[in-house]
Amino acid sequence: MSGIDNTLKEIFGFDKFKPGQKQVVETIMAGTSAASIFPTARENPFVISYQPFLSKG
Image (tube, rainbow, N blue to C red; front, side):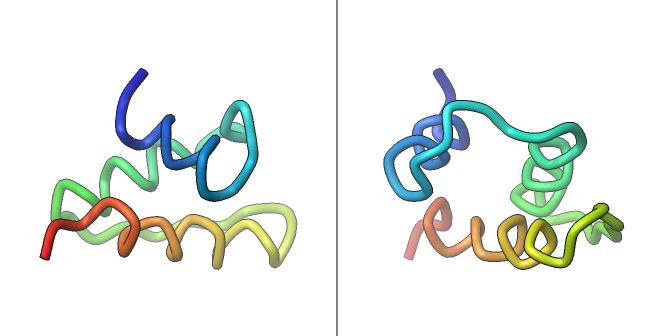
């Protein structure tokens, strides 16, 4: 299980990502800009809030 998957379970309490979420998190963590549109307004802040939990420093 990757750090992204562990954080999903440990911090947010979810077992799996919804379609497209993991790809956006991986893109942001790789230092690349990403634009995302999800069906609910709650999903975008969730994806954005991931980076502080995985960033070193």
